[in-house]
Amino acid sequence: MTSSRKKLPGELRSARWFAPDDLRSFGHRSRVMQMGYSQAEFTDKPVIAIINTWSDINQCHTHFKQRVEDVKRGVLQAGGFPLELPAISLSESAVKPTTMLYRNMLAMETEELIRSHPIDGVVLMGGCDKTTPGLMMGATSAGVPAIYVPAGPMLRGNWKGHVLGSGSDAWKFWDERRAGNISKEEWIGIEGGIARSAGTCMTMGTAATMMGIAEAMGMTLPGASSIPAVDANHVRMCADAGRRIVDMVWEDLTPAKILTRPAFENAIVIAMAMGCSTNAIIHVISMARRAGCDIGLDDFDAFSRKVPVIANIRPNGDTYLMEDFYYAGGLPGLMSRIPDRLHLDAITVNGKTLGENIAGAEVYNDDVIRTVDNPLYHEGALAVLKGNIAPDGCVMKPSACEPRYFKHAGPALVFDDYPSMKAAVEDENLDVTADHILILRNAGPQGGPGMPEWGMLPIPKKLVKQGVRDMLRMSDARMSGTSYGACILHVAPEAYIGGPLALVKTGDIISVDIPNRTINMEVSDEELARRRAEWTPPPKRFERGYGWMFSKHIRQANDGCDFDFLETDFGAPVGEPSI
Ligand code: FES
Ligand code: MG
Image (tube, rainbow, N blue to C red; front, side):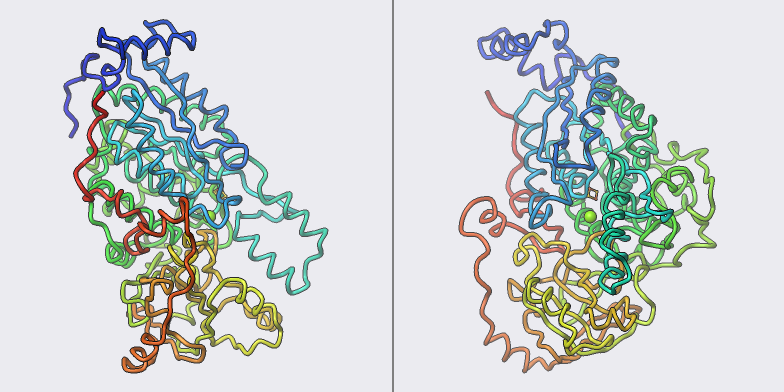
């Protein structure tokens, strides 16, 4: 529980900048006054950083330009002093090779923005995939009170009466276009209809998953994560968050008091019940380890076997989207369906427990938010497989693939890089059947680099024309949370650093057994040793710059892909700036 003693103004962190009667503080005060503020506006008041990931190239955060004013309004009303600090935006659709290369950069930027400035509390504004974990990781390490303002999902897509879902319908209709069933003109119509307002992807992709997880961990106001970006309730939530963070500073309600092991277990349970993106695994592990909680792959597998998928949101099911989820009661509604699986005494940013926050929550549409007795899937939002091809594990989403692949053995068809795979799948003479297992390697954290979302390998055109729409695919890459299919991902250790995936050859039999959580290549240890002796590492990805640092310090997928030097137990904690 939080202490009831309120902080005194002289105990504010910002007082170290603004209170002393010395030359340094003269500089700090006079430079705030340079902006037109009088001393009464910032003296003895919590200084609230609003870390805003708005940019002109992040379409999911376009409303943040206005919403930041709503947050400021709340901060001012509660007697705080708001300062907007922009941070790298990480537009999921624009950044190459992948935003995952830069998640840790946002985390570092967030941590250091807070640490180096006179900040007492922070409002984190994000939503597009990597921004949620990046902001959260940095704020956790910085340690001042923090509240998360999720961008919220965009409105449903619409084209010729079809309700379109982000990502999922792009893949689906692209296969129809490849099969010759959709014209170029129709395709342009889909481009104009699939994303038609500010906000994040509105399927249960990584953005919706991570915003929901932020709420489940207790880092957002109740219900915040599913409010559509353009809904007036989103404006009100922003002002509420601005008001609340000021009180959190006086109460000293820091992330360390919220982000406990029970909070992360709540996050995993909710992720499973939502039918989450596979990316959640990497991000929750890295966020938890920043908070000193040793969450690993096995925790996900264990909860996956116990928690049914009850959110009927695409790509799970084929009907509803996040807008429907909000109208059906949103995350509080979903949590009210599984209270016995949650740690209801976990404290949240509003100072109340999760249990208090969901008391009275209702579900208004039992088809969108199912009951536990009538779930979408009884178990298996995620499965962690291990075996001689992935000794440190790999993951898949049984709920998004056809059950005939749950136990399968077939020959590997191996690609060493994305361009050769992309060219091969378009070749109608490719020697491939629906029983093959397509493998893409050298696409992991170091090999990709940045572990791009290449894991939903395209079905070879020859098979698409035969009507095949799913097959087993395997990689050390990730896949978009809006993707679907029998895709085995995050193989660790990755091929690029010499993981066993590097040793597979086309034609080797791979056997997958999802109920028993195993995946093996049927190749003898002696033969693998022989292949290992012949293996040479691929060329270096970076010789300078950020990428060089990334390649030196990035951890593997099963460890959350944080930088080793940012992990909590790496060296002594960073102290406060001394002068
Ligand atoms: Fe931003 Fe999907 S592109 S959430
Ligand atoms: Mg995505």
